[in-house]
Length: 103
Figure 1 (tube, helix red, strand yellow):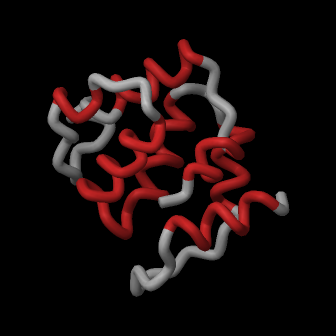
Figure 2 (cartoon, one colour):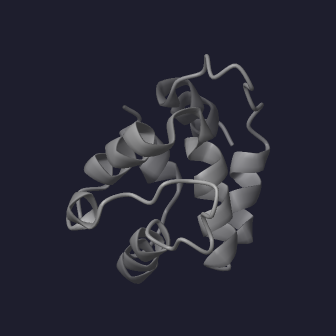
């Protein structure tokens, strides 16, 4: 799965830690099941991305955008908003990562 997605979304370590905290915020992600704490105890961004895909499926980008806005990182969220959303969920994160590389 798209490690290059995380490379294109450059979060410093503090923002990344805050990002993971928001993935457990039931208020922010009210319509989604939160990711189990033990899956977020790593600093490996690939494993976090995998946990998000496992948990949110086709809604991973939506969750990512919401968390980035909450972090005050709207400029990064804007990059994701430019990605053409696939309501049928046929687009995988490799395709998303390839798209983001050219932004």
